[in-house]
Image 1 (cartoon, rainbow, N blue to C red):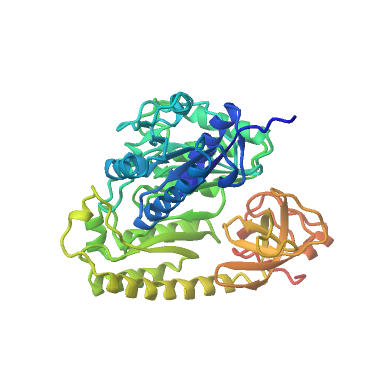
Image 2: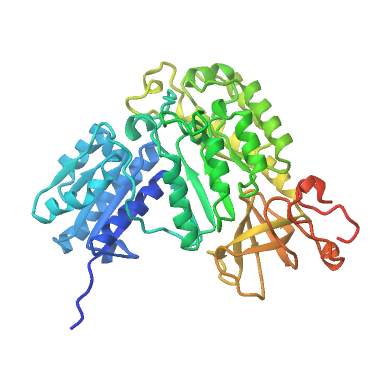
Amino acid sequence: MEVRRRSAKVVTFGCQMNERDSETIMGILSSLGFEESSRVEDADIVIFVTCCVRENAENRAFGNLGEMKRLKEGNPNLVVGMCGCMAQRSDLREIVRARMPWVNLVFGTHNIHRLPELLERVFAGERVVEVWDEPDEVVEGLPAVRAYGHKAFVNITYGCDNFCTYCIVPYVRGRERSRRMEDVVAEVCDLAGSGCVEVTLLGQNVNSYGRGLPPLPSGSSPDFADLLHEVNLVDGIRRIRFTTSHPRDFSDKMIEAVASSEKVCEHFHLPLQAGSDRVLEMMHRGYTAERYLALLDRIREAVPGASITTDIMVGFPGETEEDFQATMDVVRQARFDAAFTFIYSPRPGTVAARMPDQIEDEVKHDRVYRLIDLVNSIASEVNDELCGSIVEVMVEGPSERDPSVLSGRTRTNKMIHWTSEKAHNPGDIVMLRVSQTRTWTLYGEEIEGRSGYRGALTCDGHEAAGEEMQGRTASSSGFATDGRCDCNDV
C-alpha cells in the first residue's frame, strides 16, 4: 500500500520580502520531507507568513487563522503555525497565544532558520512560541522552494534604519543588515545555473545596501551601484529588477549604474508618500517635493523611456486639504506609470500613531478616491503613448483569465497580453508591437525580430534589410525612446 507523503502549505500575506521568506520556509519544510500542498485542506502543516504594515493585512491573517480551528477539529494532528511581522508584535502575538489554542507554533522574522528545531518540539507535543526581539547575523545557505523557475527574488538587505514615522517595518524587521556582495552574486549564479533568467534584488531600501560591510579591494565601501554592476556580469541572467528604492538615497552614481548596465530593467519604484513638504517632514522622509521631482528628471534624462511607479498615502495625521492638493500637484507633474494608493492606518508603536489631528475616515476615503481617479487618468495617457511601439517582453505564461492568451512583462514592468501560434515557455523573450492599451495593461502582436538587451530592437524593415542594432541604445539606433522605430518601414 502506498504511503502518502506528509505535505505542507505556506500562506503568504504582504510584501515581496514575505514572499521570499515563504520560499525559505517551504525549502526548510521540503528538506524535512514535506511536499508542497496546493490546498490548505490537504496539508499536514500550514504556516501563515503574516504582515502588519496595514490593518487590513492583520484582519485577513486573523481571519485565516480563525478558519483553521475547523480544520484542526477534523484533524487533531494538523500543525498550524504563524510567523512574520505580526508575530514580532507582542500584542498580536498575545492574541494568538490566548485566544487561538489551535495554533501550535509562533515564530518571528529573525529566527526562520530555527524552524527544524521548533517543529521538533511541536511534534513532541509542546506548544511553541519563540520570537527574537533582535536579529542575529545573516544566515546564509538556507534552502528554498522557488515560486517560479524563470524568475526569483534575491534578498540583499534585511531590516530598515529609516524609521519613517508611520512605518512599523524597523520594529518588526529589525535594523538594517546587508548581505556580503559575494553571497548575493553566488546566489544569483546558482539561480542562473538552474535556468532562472530574471532576478529581483530585494531590500526595504536597496539604495542603502553596503552599510556596515567591509571595504572592497579598492578600499571603497561597497554600495548598491557596485552590486548592480556585479550582478549584471552573471551569465544567463537576462533581466535585473530591484525594489524598493528610497528617494532620499537615490544617488547619481546609482542612476549611472542602471543606465550603463544593460540587463537592469528601466523601471524605478520610488515611493513618494506625499507631495506636501510639511507632511513629508512629519513623515521623516528626508526629501522635499522639489527634490523628488528633480530626481525623476535626472532619471528620465539618463534612462530614456523609463517607467516610474510609486506609493502614495493619504490621510496622514494633520494632513490638510492644502497638503492633499500639493500631493495631487506632484502627481500631475510626475506622471507616474502606476501608483499604489492607500489610506493611512495607525500602527501601534509608531510615532505617527501618537500624533494629534488624526484624520476622519470619511475624509481619508474622499481623498483616496480623488487621488485614484487622477492616477488612473495619467496612467491611461502614459500607456496610450505606447500604442504602435515595439517592446521586448518576457513570457510569464497563459493569462489567468484566458488560457488561450499569453501574458508577459515589458522591461518597464508593464503587463502585456497577446496570442501566438508559437509555443512559448515562461522566461522566453519575444518582441511585440503594442496594438491596444488600457489603464494598467497592454495588448500586442508578436513580430519577427531579434531581441538583445537594452535598446537592442529591430523592426521588420531593418530585419529585412539585414540591419542589426545589437548593443546600441534606443536613442542612437533609430528608435524613439518608447521603442517605436523612426524609420519609414514600420
